[in-house]
Image (cartoon, rainbow, N blue to C red; front, side, top):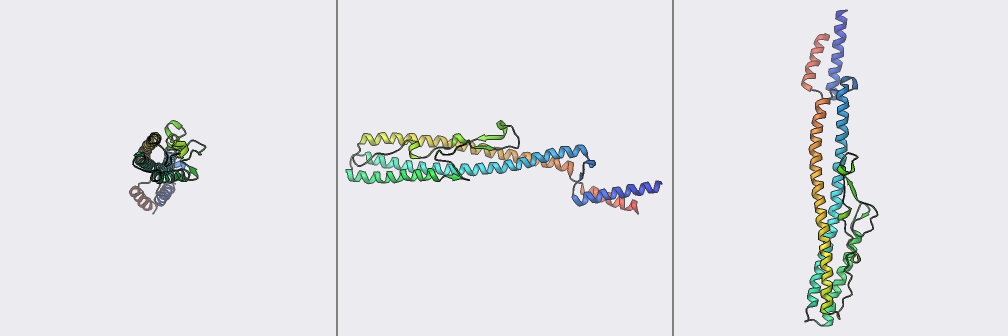
Amino acid sequence: LIAQRSLNGANSGLQSAIKRLSTGYRVNQAGDDAAGLCVAQGLETQIRGNKRALLNIQDGLNMMYIAEGGMSGVTEDLQRIRELCIQAANGVYSEAQQQTLFNEVDERLADIDVIANTTIFNGLNLANGTIQKNVTLQTGCGSDSTNNSIDITGALTDLNVSALGVESTLNGQSTGDEIRAYIEKLDDAINKIAENRSMLGAFQNRLSSASDNLTIMNENYEQSKSQIMDADMAEESANMVKYQVLQQ
């Protein structure tokens, strides 16, 4: 009876060692470590949620890079329009010469509307004011919106000419005062875009920081889970040999 019981124990120990060596896990079923399995499952939930949040953050950053690209293009057009207006305000040009300058102004304004209507990410138009929802990024794996989401809607600017207030009625007969008044509108538009672009940059930095934090968290979670779930291969190899000898 003693021999039979010892043999059964050796068989059970050998099977357990082989299973752990085969799977790489110390805990293969709840009976192996009920409390440890519960903790490990909680860690796995955090790990998988954080991985998805990291992908969300990268999607959000890509979207903001596209939005910033649109802002950059419009700012360049506005800066060129401002240069042309400063040139046209100089009283050394004929009406015909002024008109050639304003022809380029009109083309630049048309380009601004094109940029506004084609700055799109995943079907969302980011720059013409038609987006119908708040753009809130899920940056964490929890349900608490305060700590797990970022609303970047306020950084998205309507870049259409009408929204920026820079519609032009200037022509070759425009006076210097009319042109200078338009330059003031251009300055307001440039400043507005710069403020929103700065806000966008702040959100980008915040998302990068959140990404770094999630990466560090996952490293620690993985280490904790490994200590609970993963088998000690050297120990299990020794156990297998031990139980094989006892079995024989």
